[in-house]
Length: 412
Image (cartoon, rainbow, N blue to C red; front, top):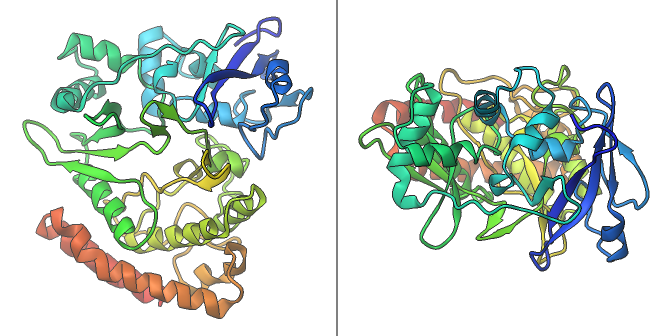
């Protein structure tokens, strides 16, 4: 932890020009206390982009405390690695298992951090560039991630060093960023030996299925098993080539901790829809969120926790938008009866009445309008399954087809 006399400087890549500026100071105190203040230079320059529209709205000359994550502000926790990255950092830097999140914020490299924030100990922005592995190295990256996951010696020594320096992204599964020939960044996620199914294939099918249904899902590419395991790569929506997009997780918007939260009271799609309205996202984003909730119910993605939803700042539109859907994976073990997030107040169960109970909070004028929109979406989801599932083997295609019919019956 940083002591009060030595603040941590937070940098932001400006959404308009791409220049790096010092946006604020993070100062940690004793016993988990901490504050954030927007930097005087940021205020004097006339910049007004809040880095978190809910928890850190742009308020000059105000110290804002951090009520969660042991004294780390929500959006800074968003910029930290999760289970996978934390495990690598513990091994590399001998970090105690119960170290506070702020420790991982400092140790993680700015080169691969999620969103448009970076951190440092100098008043002027200092963001080290670290080239990501190229797409041509995909098989080597998969091999090295498998070796890391198995706590085995390096297969490719130089690549291992680079991967250990690029662990800022969330999630529990091994992953790495790769860059394609056009300069776009992709998140590569290979399968694991312990998987009960081809998880990369399931994620690719779900993401493609959602897009074919007319929803905004992040594009994916599936790489069938070659010499090793299959992998899926997902286009990073927080990157436009070398430009970074400011992002905030739904966990931050909902003011709930994940992981580590003891209560799911705030894990709610209707509440998230209202936060979208409050921050000025267009009405279509609330309907999009409603559609994703329904799609998760149909495909059986019950890993839809608040850190698997996000918003991003749209530089062209000058406002916050719901980010593309990501990490949508049908449950590979069973057909869930509930989702992780509430579909309506106090209800997690997959049922038509549950889905429509709070439809007005998603911007529908009345229940009849919401029911008609729901039925049209269900038709699209049902009608696009065969095209989306063509990469699955017969057994998994049949299993998901049966799940589709079961859940369509619950929602119609």
